[in-house]
Amino acid sequence: MKKQQFVVIGLGRFGSSIALELMALNYEVLGIDRNEEIVSDMSDLLTYAVVADASDEEVLKSLGVRNFDCGIVAIGEDIQTSILATILLKDLGVSTVIAKAISVLHGRALEKLGVDRVVYPERDMGIRVAHQLVTPNLLDYIELSEDYSIVEMKVPMCLDGKTLTEINTRSRFGCSIVALHRTAGIIIAPTGMDQVRMGDIMVLIGSNANIEQFENEVM
Ligand code: ADP
Image (cartoon, rainbow, N blue to C red; front, side, top):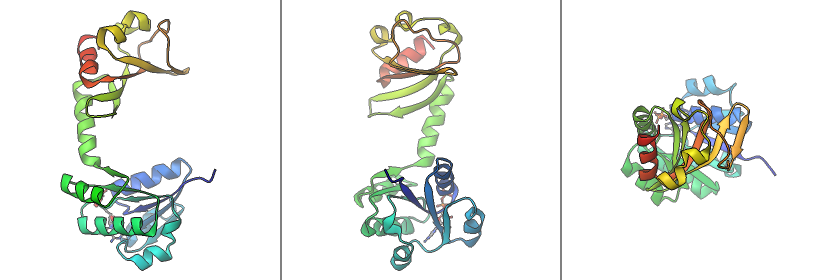
């Protein structure tokens, strides 16, 4: 299967971070920014980096943007340009368009344009850091819906050596441990006999209320 190719519009803090990570994951990335200095700094780090105005349709056409599988509009502060660039990517036929929003209204406008995903980096990182601050063992979480999440937690000392049957999250808290990460590897769908060790990472799925109860009573 052909590897996906990405075009990142706006190489500010968010755009450059996405672009560099995609490169580290061995994908081809075209980065576009109107700021010459930024482009020159990134030119050795990306597959292609071009100084261009992303709100100019002819420019995007001439760069062959339509041939990219995924476009990321990483312009936040200048909402008008973010919207114009998004419309152009959609019109040129880029199959997946992801755009950064800096406010709820900006996000709503992007959704109306039919972007596949709106990301709110500052808001989402703020929420994530707040959760990590109040739950020290929480490493990460993914919201599945308003009420359900998947969370990654470090196994604390108090659970060291316990089997999943002993911890018994399912009947005590209505949530399930679906994977265990440890240096030796990952156990997917662990059984009741599997033991957790302090420092292992357990992946838990359940309702937010049940996960919170587990965190409060066990962690
Ligand atoms: P961040 O907060 O992630 O740094 P910014 O919105 O501050 O995001 O940065 C957006 C980037 O997009 C800047 O590097 C800016 O030069 C670039 N940019 C803004 N308008 C255009 C445009 N019309 N065409 C190309 N790049 C643009």
